[in-house]
Length: 182
Image 1 (cartoon, rainbow, N blue to C red):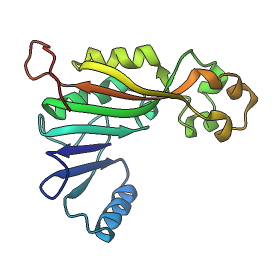
Image 2: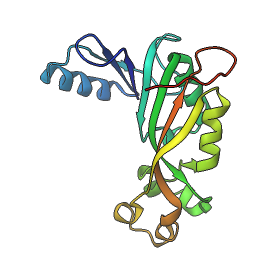
Image 3: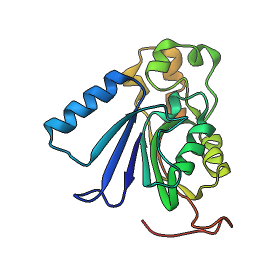
C-alpha cells in the first residue's frame, strides 16, 4: 500500500508499507538506486498502518486488499490516515458470484489472489460503511484467471472474477457531505 502527502514531486512524499523486512529492504534499495529521496518505506500491515491520523492526501493500493481476511479493518485504516478531502484509489480483485469451497481453500487460487476476494457489492459496501463518500468503480475488467491457474473448476468461474479500480473520498466534515475534485 502506498500513501502520498501533497502532490508527489520534489516537495511531495510517498510512504510504502510492506509486511516483511525483506520487502522493505528491497524497496529501499530500489529507491536508492533510482535516487528517489522523497520515498519512505515502513514495516507494517495494511490492517494497522504505521502512519499518523489525518496525515496523507492519497491512499493507493494495487491488488493486496483481497489477501486480507479483515477488509473492513483495511478500509478503516485508510480512512483514519487520510486527511479530510483525501482520496482512496485502489485496484483489486472482486467476485460477481460466490466461489465454491474447493476454490476458496485452494493454495493456487490464494496465490493467484482469487480465494480471498470478496463479492463486489460487499466490497463496495465495506468502503462506504467506514465513511468514504463518492465511492465509484472507475474501471472494471475480467481477470485473466485462465492464464494464471490451470484448474478446470476455477476456469468455470472465470467470468465472475473481475479486476476493479475503485475511487472514494474522505469527507471534509463529520456530516458526510460530499466533496469533489481530484
